[in-house]
Length: 177
Image (cartoon, rainbow, N blue to C red):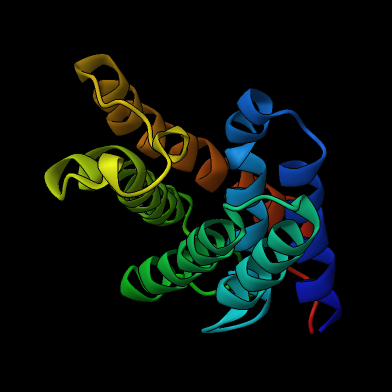
C-alpha cells in the first residue's frame, strides 16, 4: 500500500502542480513510477498507482475533465501492467531485461498516447460531437499533431523504460516487499 500511495501521489504532483504544457512533457515521470510500481507489486501495481494518481488529480483539479483524467491514468497503469506481463518482465533481485522493459514501456505509452489523442481529436470528428459537447474539450487534429503523438508516445516510453531499468538494476532490485 505504501508503494502505491507514494507513487500515485508523485504522479498526482507531477500532473497537478505543473501548468498544462509542462505536465504533458512530464509523462515520462508518470511512466517511470508506473513501471516501478509494476516491478514492486506483481500483476496490478501500475494499475493501482495509476488509479490513485488519476483519482487524486481528478478530485483536486476541479475540472470538468476529471473523469477523463482518472480513466486515462488508470488505463495507462493497466497498459503498463499488461505489456510487462506480455514481455514477461519481473522485478527480481537479479535485475530486469533492459531491452524488454524499453519495448514494453514504448508500446504502453504509444497505446495511451493514441487512445487519448483519438478520444479528444479523432473520435469527436467521426461522430460529429463538436455540435453536442463543448468544443473547448477537443483538439483539432492535424498531420503534425498526429505525427508528434506517434513519435513522442514511444520515445517517451523508451526513455521511461531505460530510466526504470537503470534504477531497478542499479539501486532497487535488492529491496523486497
